[in-house]
Image 1 (tube, rainbow, N blue to C red):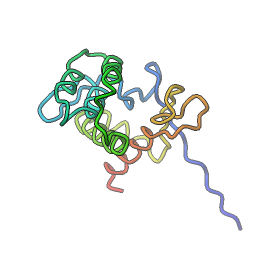
Image 2: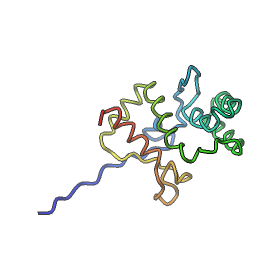
Image 3: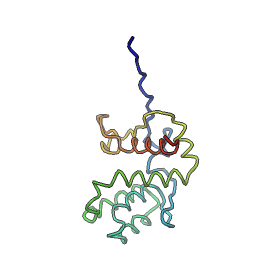
Amino acid sequence: MAVTVAPRPRILFYHKHNPHYGFTNFSSHPVVYHGKRYPTSEHLFQSFKFQGHRPDVAEHIRTCSQRPSVAFSEARRFQASVRADWKNINVEKMDETLYHKFTQHSDLMQELLATGNAELVEDSDKDAFWGIGADGRGRNELGKALERLRAQFRGD
């Protein structure tokens, strides 16, 4: 007798007007890291590209605007100064960013835990690394990071 396994439910998140927008780094959930307040987790994540070797740029990104899109744009503007090992550590830094965000916002932690075993999918048509991209076949690294965090919170 063949056993069929039902596919995991999928939870899509990305757009501000849809559920689970808080799972994105653009949601307005400030994060405190090493005693400094970052307006959003996007600010913290982008600043990680420069912390240590370019603290001036990291601080600029933290304080440039309340808007996460500006933090993203400013990090792009300073692309030449991004730490050399960024591609090797960016997923680890996303994990760290999300840990700080979700442990500082218990409502988000509860929302994440309430997703059960669902596959979490950043439904971004613009980003095939952190999201699923325009063709839906992207790496979805943000969704995977959230699933790792959920498992960590549950003690899996």
